[in-house]
Length: 574
Image (cartoon, rainbow, N blue to C red; front, side, top):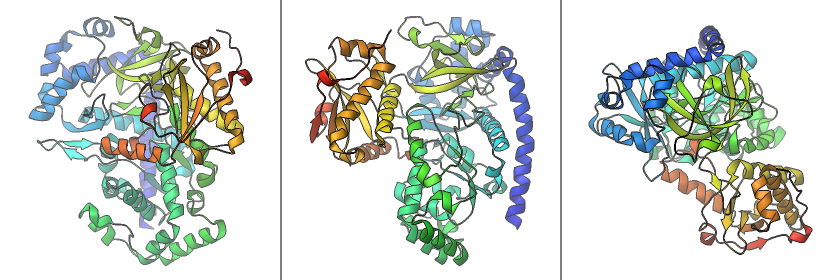
């Protein structure tokens, strides 16, 4: 009863605060240029008196026009020297004014073996939380049922390592989750200590162990594969979970994590009533799926855009018809959009977190690319997004390609398409990962298949071509494999006129199908998670590689192609 009362008070307070934030956000969308100028002034004031600020002349920049004239577009390599010196010396005045606190470095993969360390200051974290609170406010207005019971977030730890001066390095979302007050943490279905478990099998079993012991109405994570993995663990280890609930135990090797879980495990108590409920679910349905374990589940939130949206087709069986809302365009650099509905993945820009510029994709290869401000964008156009923010980044190209799909008052509503680097062009076709993932997904749907593990790889030859590699277990009947290739070809030629032109002129050969061991993609996933420090929640599969050597490193057991004479691909008008 006490916990239910605490939840009711917390949810009421959240709704009250959320209403204020929503009013402020909606007001900003009606005066985007003014709101953005204010953010830019605040960013410059935070950093002008730093060593970096003096070197860049930030104190002499008073408006967006001067910013664009005096500072070049940057990448992480441009700011790395400042970040590394601040990290190595512990002196925050390298990048920020003396009054600013550095909370952590958010780790994310970089262009080389060393991960990027994005500074998270007290101000950047406050802006990040403000964006989250605004998003939660709208989401829970639309889905009041989601606040009825507990919330289950799946995040990584904020402390995966520390600098020699004791500054945590890890996940920004982990920081937000772990630093909530103890009262707020009472609504969480799992204790924060679980997020630091490095062994993924142990982590997800432990999360399932706590979560199935109580009603859950709100699921939050970034990567939809995290929820699919959780559902798989719940189903495959149903008997272990029921036994642990009945006995008040934890049947996993949590001791390998040291004493971080000692207090949490000691607090577990036998719950025969809940165990009986779970047994009845298993007996009635044959599974221990979230939709039955949590019948009042009101909302699932995760990324839906880019290549990750295809995972949602796998939600029906474990999650039923529970609504799914995109959490917004998020990165270690901060929140960039606030989706306001369940439709698609697009959302208006988070106008308080960053000062934005946008580089049209066609400007990428120019020596002095032009940029536009948020209120100058056009619907239907694609842009690279540039950030100037409270983490010490200026005109920073995050390499995300977005598309403007609508406007909320004056504010662009944008959706993430892909990372700009995820292109392949053997002979000028400029295929994007987004086009590839969409084509394979659509082709599989036409055949009634579900293919989630695949990669399109270039193969040099006369002529060069692409091979779609996947495991035999992902495919339907063998006699239908050529139809899969035909459909992928049709989709690619429809979505990319350059690819269609190169295929018609025979500068590109027909798509091939290459079968690899079913374990290949799991091994690839494991290698990349290990290389990035065990960050499973931020793992994004690669569906396209431009590496011409990749095919030679594969063990392909069988290769299938289709003769051009029987190819049904349509002619596409440019």
